[in-house]
Length: 394
Image 1 (cartoon, rainbow, N blue to C red):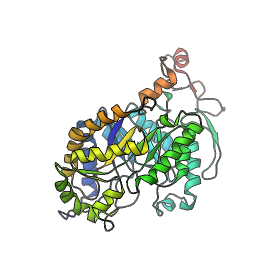
Image 2 (cartoon, rainbow, N blue to C red; image 1 turned 135 degrees about the vertical axis):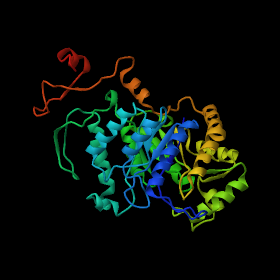
Image 3 (spheres, one colour; image 1 turned 180 degrees about the vertical axis):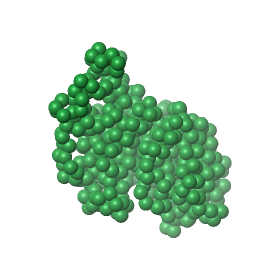
Image 4 (cartoon, one colour; image 1 turned 90 degrees about the vertical axis):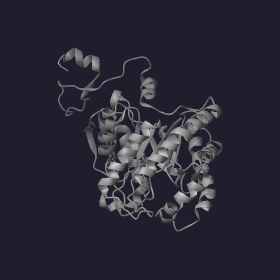
């Protein structure tokens, strides 16, 4: 089981101090938050992708590569990567490069994005969002698994004899989660490929996510990737902690009331009752989070949103301290004790390499200098051992 935090990179006015951070201050804070997540014992840091104010994370791979250089153990991922407005060729190359730079401790979560103006900024039509997402991922999936790709689709120019570089680390593609708030089509896509399914699990009652996750598990089994219990599920969640419940509510209330995403609507207490939002003592957050397993079954990744709504950096770092010291260790033990033996483990690069190669050495793709570029239609790569024998200088 992996525990971590996810950030949407919003720049929001602090309703208590009245201060709105600059873009530079927010970017610096995100890096500090990620580094501290590793320091307190969390497993995962996820950053969203946005191309419109008030969000600042428009280049997740750049940000994650920098964080990767400052950390040693933290798994780096996205929440989400826009598979609709990004060219799948660029996604294949940028995330493979990130995978190399951080030695495999990364994966990514793909999503459509729901901000209508963003689509035309990148030459796309939001009305085509679903078929665009399905087509683009089909191409991305192939680019990471085939040295040479011939491809033709509806939304971009064809590819003939194309090779995405660099090839994935150890010739094992990054693990992919498909993130969704509403639609079963994305759950179907995740199940079809045997990928992970990440339910946002923030703004809606649990019954909404139960339907989506149940559907994904059924289709995962239908496509022959394993039993429903072996499906790979991730969950989001929101938490604000203090030593006792009253302090937590008093401190978080002004941020909740002014937050663009859920303020000016139901009261905080009503929102807690209706959604996975946890505001309270460490034990209350533990108890609420344990209900996720009861509602959705065993799952592999839990990410908390803790740095939103204008919360100052000092407060966010305190939240991480409370999570790392008082919450996550208990959740690890409790969820491990309740875990069904049939449930899958959290995906890692090392596990994926072992699943593909067993005890054998992983393939290390090397360009075949004898063939030059891929003008002949053959693969520009050959296995490591053959390449070394033919070209010792490699």
